[in-house]
Length: 401
Image (tube, rainbow, N blue to C red):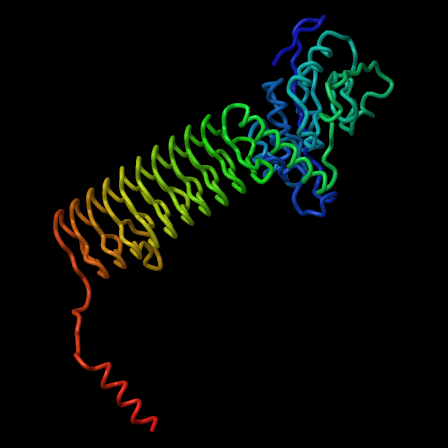
């Protein structure tokens, strides 16, 4: 991004300083990889840097690959290669990765102040500043870089913006502050959050107006929740798309899945990655699903496992049903057509298909495809011996005496 100055257009780079290891946290992970408010510290800084420059450099140390991946934008540069990476630029923002409360508006004020002056550096407190690349002899911590040169300073609207994360206690306090701000912003936009201090909502989560979030809910990653949805207490939802008027009852754990409008999930449902739940469908208590697709209005009320399965619209999956998707070496799919009925305690040994409108008798083990509208029963014949129990009790009584 070029900035107008007295000398014409100048090219500005933004360098996120993320080379610090985790020793201050007594951690094996680089400092920038630790999270506050649902984002890695380096990600907070990278997003700020991208707001004032199209050229973002992630200055990393030994854990460069992971740090660059966590940043999510820009390109990684080893700390001792920074000067070489800046050769094509006129100015550079040096931004530590541990000031997540810093506002983009403040950085833009620094950029304007620097672009309209002849100073070698424009500083915002200790640790943040924009420098003329030609004035940098070598990379070193701020503000020593600018010693002996013309320096201007710009103040932040609040000193809180410059709060550094130096310890794990600081990190916890920063996390609480960022999450409180996130919940406040959602409530200001029309989301009902009961006991927001008990909820953990990540920075990238989106929740539409008129949704309801009950106490002790975690919304993680890039989760999206539609208007009128109701998430009950003790749910953990990560990277999911939840439609309008969806109900998620207490205690559900949902990951990397999509739930269409009007569906109902829970309580105590576990949706592993890759699930797609159709409009008005229902997964009930103690149902686990993985890479499962349920059509519109399909139901699995309780105590079922649906792995690598496709369930057609309007089908009913009884209690205790299992799709046996793993043969010890490979995963296989189960296909269930529209309007099928799978009786309780049935096992469907994949790969297998159940046609539309077919019935599976309770307690069946299904190993062969079932045609549409057929009845399949795969269980042993019942044997009844009248009087057997009474005779057994009498025999035991005799033996006791």
